Image 1: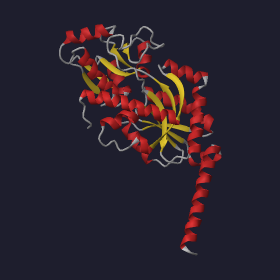
Image 2: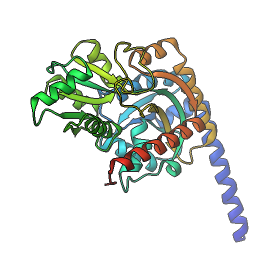
Image 3: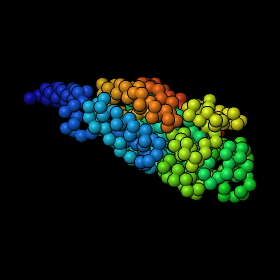
Image 4: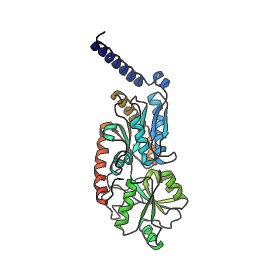
Length: 331
């Protein structure tokens, strides 16, 4: 057989294989079950806010997709390990990544060689919520407000201005720097490998305060074990109506809200992406899911893949300016 004929046959076989793959994934039944569960990766340890959110969604997505959906924790480096794993994963519709803004928008700004480029290595699937970051004080700290916390830090001397953050070179770490500059305090960020270990030290009064997302703090705040004293964003949070915004306290310019979204490896068939995106939209519209996410401090709302990608780019542009102004150099 001539070489050109062989190439034509190979091309036809490849097209048939791709058609069968997409068909199997769209059916979501026996074909997927035979190849294993869909993987929803999370870049932070079990027990933190992002992990809890992923498990709520995974439990409902399995019914929408007709196949098991398991959460896989690839913790470390602020989600960088999970993002690299997503880039390396086959684009077969069996691996997805649930992430907030830090890994997708911020890491590429603060790490010289993160090992992934969101614009080329990922495809945005669906956004499902926004949230705000907050400053919370530990239970052993007598402060009950932002001003009382600032006064307490000044009265304690060196070493008491340590503030936990869930990841190095993250938005919370930059916020610690900005707060310190604003109030002329020697605040030092203490980076952790996720919100769960940071919360452990806050509950044990090993550190006096932490900056993280409202979902990270809300349960312990409700239980009186820690106290959220200020939130970012343009308005007070419905779940924390008595907690002022940083803008109310004189620290404006941080109204752009961080987000949660789901991503897939570049090259994943569009039909598969669309089906998963539709499943996410249906899941977050469920009253019980919406209620659980809302009580965690999220503002629930669906975004299509293109809308999520646009949000990711805009958020990165906003923080690129802030990071540059801080004098931070990519490591």
